[in-house]
Amino acid sequence: MVAFKLAEVSVVTEVIDGEAIIVDMRNGCYFSTDGLGARLWQAAIAGVSRETMLAAVAQTYPTVADGAEAAGAFLDKLVEHDLLRVSEAATAETALEGFPTAYAAPSLEQHSDMQDLIMLDPIHDVDTMGWPTRREDTPPLP
Image (cartoon, rainbow, N blue to C red; front, side, top):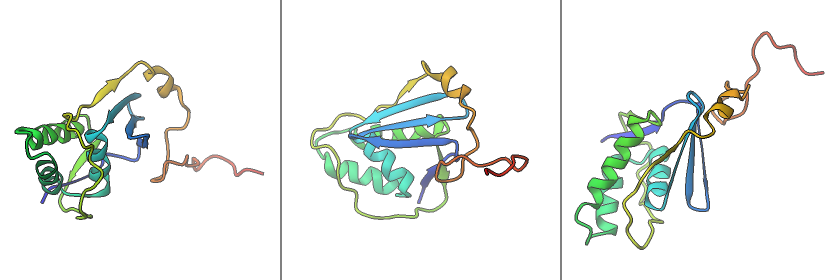
């Protein structure tokens, strides 16, 4: 089974009101997706396998002929943009819930309008939780 994981600790993400915002601190681009795309993003970073996600899309939207195919293409796009990396094994195989009731093909929007500002951010070294890490040559705070 194929699963996914976040590409690096420099990919920061948050889901707000059903929209996933994904910031790539390496190049300053940010991405957004909502609806089915946001739900697939959440499942992917939680470790749900690609096969389980595509089967859930096909089961949830049985009248949509290319629903699972579109979901697969969406996941491929996340890997192409180096936001996700392919992992050998799934870490979570829970039932997927929370798909939108009406089908809309998942899409990923890329934004570069704030690229310069994001790249100016002096905090690029973060731990796995997204908190800044102290350089070793930085003196401790008083």
